[in-house]
Image 1 (tube, one colour):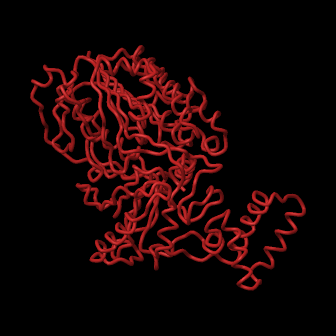
Image 2 (cartoon, one colour):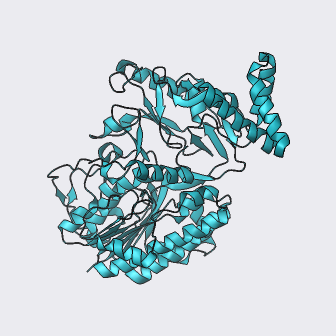
Image 3 (cartoon, rainbow, N blue to C red):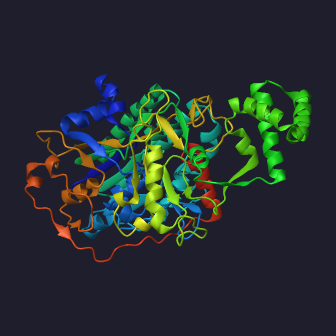
Amino acid sequence: MTKTLLVGWDAACWEYLKPLLDGNRLPTLQKLIQQGVSGTLHSTMPPWTPTAWSTIVTGKNPGKHGIFDMLRKKPGGYDFVPTNASFRMGAPFWKYLNQQGIRTGMVNVPFTYPPAPVEGFMVCGFGTPSTLSEIAFPPEVNGWLKVQYKDFKPEVDAEVLRTAPPEEIFGIEKEQQGRFVHIATHLADQYQVEVLVINLMFPDHANHKMPQLEQVQESYLHTDQDLARLLDSFQPDNVMLLSDHGSSRVKGDFWLGAWLRDQGYTVEIENSPKDRAAAFNWLLMQFFREYLGWSGVFEKVIRKITKETFFNLPQGIQKNLWARIEKNFPHARQFVLSSGKPDFKRTRVIFGSAYSGLLYFNVVGREPQGLVSPDAKQALAEEIKHKLLQIKDPDTGRPLFTNVFNSDIYFGKAVPHAPDLILDAYDAEWNIRTSKYTAHPGPAVNSYFFKKANYRDFGWHSRDGIYVFTGPAFARPEKPIEGNLLDIPATLLHLYGVPIPEDFDGQVLTDVLSSALRATPVKFQPVEEEIEGQEQAYNEEDAEKLVEHLRALGYLD
């Protein structure tokens, strides 16, 4: 039995790894690199975990598998719902392995919930609501998880991510990854799998939540130790280590939502008098307590007087007071006066997730209150693209956006689900947020750029990840070879002599294979029936819990 470990070192990039490798601080990874072949692995656009891993799982571009984001825009409407595996189109690579009698185990592979039957086992992880208890296949694995870990949750509690100090989050994320490693090694032995797939997400979450790069590096050291545990227990013949995207540190946020509003692409419904009063009361409380240092009865009395008289003051005085408040709370007036909900009768651009930079047009005949005619879509796209590419980093003067793509970068049956614009800011040092206003944005550079202050998201994704392959199936080429996530499943199938489905978009990375495998012709197989996404949406409670967790990680506003 030839065993292969396909292990994700989530968000790993050579920029983070090189100093640690040079200092001999990652002995396990260092050994794999020395014994095998390594290089850069290009991610999807956007380089998001659900999009990237869906490409790894299916061998298809997002236009075929249909997963573009953490959230899925419901056809014919304006609602966004959390993505899960049932939305994914295309068969997973383990189906083809199973057809040839090759047993496969998956642990914490992102967005594999709901668990599907497999010859081997599956334990879902990232992207699974914490309210769910049936997260594994076969069903008896759920019972083992409950006995072993009592109240096992596939995700770290959202409240912890939102409120706990970084050191506490670090420790909890480290323990969570350790549990997944134990689960993988135990079940791989119990079910005698030939291919074990596990994603180690601690480095990615550390990059998001840790304020110092040194803390992120520390997560890499622990991941190297977890990798050693996997190798020692599973004893694979071949190792395919990869990252679904890279990482970067950020210095602040660009408020895309506010920019779109001020450019006239989005219009919001005004607050009712009651909601306006509540928002103003909350804003005054933050302003008086945090910035003026007032407290107790004095603060409450002044706030009550201000709240009751403010909107009756002369416009000039109101304007001066707003200016003072907005020095600390940018766009505060808009926060009070607007509901934050789009007025779709007057809105041309729609968005869902915080950072994805995916924009949808409000199209006549496609959306219920469409405003943009199909013939005007291209002109609107070019107009927005032109404006976005003019935006500069206020510190360096470099363009914020590397490119702005249309949906024609994808191809396949799922393209109708694709966003109309895909914003590429993955070379920038700024997060792209759909925020229009927020309570604690940090120091304002200008109306749309905000530096980090007392903030909880310090890193983001970059486009390029890594690969490290080692074992008798691989050989170092004469020159470095760059790969693509699309190539991973095709290469894995070829290792086992499994024909590649004809609808795969990737190719076998023959240049990194052993001479024997290079000499073996790549076989192909027709696709009997294309698997459509079944779209089993979460119920309201599960969806709310998942959104809460994604928001705590910083993926959603």
